[in-house]
Image 1 (cartoon, rainbow, N blue to C red):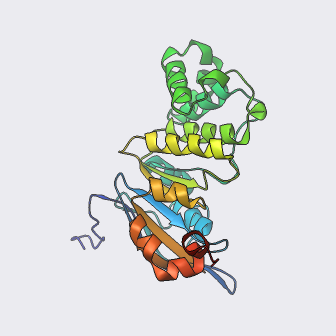
Image 2 (spheres, rainbow, N blue to C red):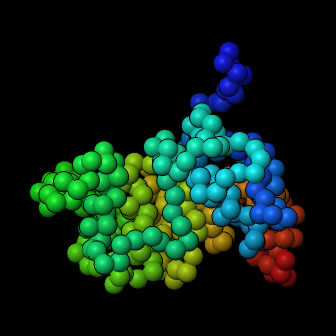
Length: 265
């Protein structure tokens, strides 16, 4: 604690959860979670359906209030802070179902995302002069190349495949200069080829952006994450590097049994 009575946090720590819990009436969806995510880390969050993973993301992002505990983001206690203020600190997230403007083009969606970096009063004037804004248009082009959508810039989002929509959503959040990116099942519903594209895309994200990823695709988690947290029934069951998680008997029993033993969990 410092002289003002606030808790000090290692400057390398991006996110710290202190005894975080969430109750929905008599149901405890998240129970006493302690967790630390460090700068530049690729942190995987896995668990069976109903383990509490997305609820935990909703608490971190501010979409839901915590029942007990504290959330510290970049050294600031954000436990009661609204979503937009957490965003200003550098937190971004994606959802299981991409939130996009289907009637607009890929270019227009990326441009709108870039406007999030500008003062609110400039948004309307920027949109009116969108095709004269060379700097932003160049950023749109480079972002599209990063997420492998440069050939689809002038196509309507409603015409994209599911995998391309996922790529676009990640492009939109990357264009806003995130410091911590929460990715909720980026590979969900993707074909084998689309999963490989997504894996390569996530690998290409700058190392100074911290990634916290919920994913059911164990191959993707094992190859992307340098640390993995396993949740089960709202609690943290295990945490460690990929090899430790694969070898953990409790994890094998409740989650990885089929993949490791070939006998089912």
